[in-house]
Length: 349
Ligand SMILES: [Zn+2]
Image (tube, rainbow, N blue to C red; front, side, top):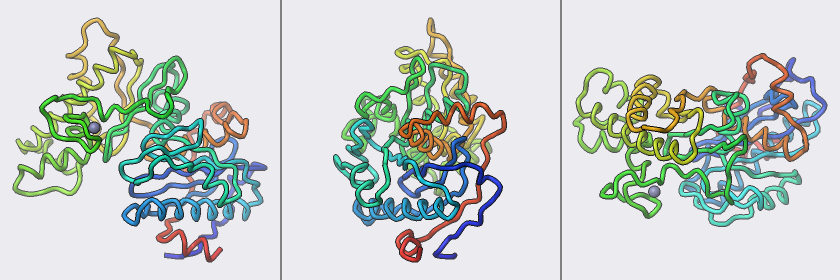
């Protein structure tokens, strides 16, 4: 693997300026140089060094932003803003990452730290809210004014779009994974008990299966495969997740009445095995409420990154969604450079 990526300019290089978009996840970061139509001009992926602690994670974000900036400058594109989206509790208005279970930081003035260390204008966002905004503007919730985007991966988090506005509430809105679905359930990492994500996250599905089954699995996709082939333990674990999700979504539907619910993240990769079953289980819980459409996410694992681009252009005063929407062509995918060690690559540039 080359430590010094120097992407070759391609035909997408048509704009005069750009933003940097970075989606920081628990296991990996996805970065892109993004033009005014949200087209990624260049993309990269790098592992998140979370076991080394929050300082190393911040160092890696800095290195990745420097690499992306150099990718942009190589193409003659001045960088307007950098949009960085992270998991946990994020106070977007104040640029502070308040809490993240996986990444370990507590009340960190992340936007200021990154701006000082990179010289870039940095705007901070929340990964799932950014993904929800992207799905709402350009993906599976397009055309609705009230939607719920649910990312089901290591945890469960949601983005609420109500009357066309993404609800933030100081960073605390959307913690669907910590809605209690079983008062006698398992202890949750948040300190609560019986939270939705102790039953219905991808990792909970794996743990629930491996706790009972003689042949352990590595990922939730294997549990889904075994459920499809009639493994009774897999069936039981899967259905428990489905019922818990339906219970959580019924509560949200009663309170906020989304027209459409978009399921994304690793568990949604199971497709109809999740979607069809949750749709039936949810409908069975509703009486007077409007039954929301339940659909799979359209942007896949790019949603957070596209959302980071929207956040960055918005901070620059540019309506990139309108520019993108003017084109009916699907959002292009750029070639992605995989970087094993961001610090080595940044130093070599
Ligand atoms: Zn919890």
